[in-house]
Length: 409
Image (cartoon, rainbow, N blue to C red; front, top):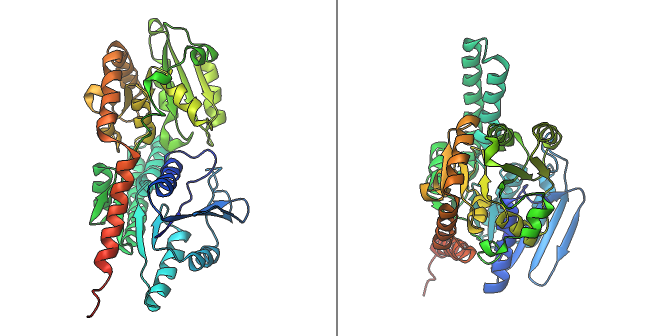
């Protein structure tokens, strides 16, 4: 079969979605005879071809405020590629111009009597992360202190716009044969959108690459971290919805006797602001996105606690990478983190509560060694890319078989 993925979230510094797609391609090449095609936005049109893979790049503009992410804006180009490829399975990783192009392509295939299975993967809670969350935060920061009535009206407007986004996403999923989510919590969130029959396919982890044995005294020395110091680490996009500022605020509240340092790895529009904030605090460092996967795994293993304050995680791949590397986690009581961080592996604070977040870092620091062991065991028991893609292909194959009419003898 020929599998095709299309997404906005694939570039040099993107995170979990790119990892998912890279691992899917690797799985298909190692364990099947299937082909894989990827369509992504870029600054130019191009196509890379190997024996059983193709990557199409479509010239697309930067999304304002979200560089380096780009938005498809020429559905005709996408349609041309879809018609050329004629994939057996198409999986949507984003839901805008690409979704309309796929719908048009599928309609023509049906009219021609051809079958194509379409799936949609709920990688991002669009309505909450990009509509309701930012709007409510802006309203609270602007008028929450001095005009509660206006704040209430602002929240109502945010909910209205979020409802519109939910209706649109629902319409996209309703036109798909397979609806996918990475966690039970996100499947329930899709149900709130009005989407039924959601299949849960957790993401995976390379248990050999991410391992406590990758811990390195040399890397800690390069970072200026002494043996008796506590190194906190975060890896992800530097954008508002990830709440990296909350991490820095929590870090500023830690007692000096804890001897804590913080490294933040990633890229995004908040980099300059966060670098300024980190410089004022001292002890915190904003690193660039680490492209070397082996060094990234070693950086995680050489740290002591993984911290993340983003409330909109749909799976939290960086969290299980950190757990596989032997780190306990301090996160927030929201999104997929509720599933990813059981109590024996870390703690969860109230969203946007830097004081509680700091207290929980202190708490976890006291039980770090035991939680580190439990974190590794937890990931070993529940996550692997082989399990992820065995299940994913089984879902698609069952759907395709169910849709093929029996032959008349």
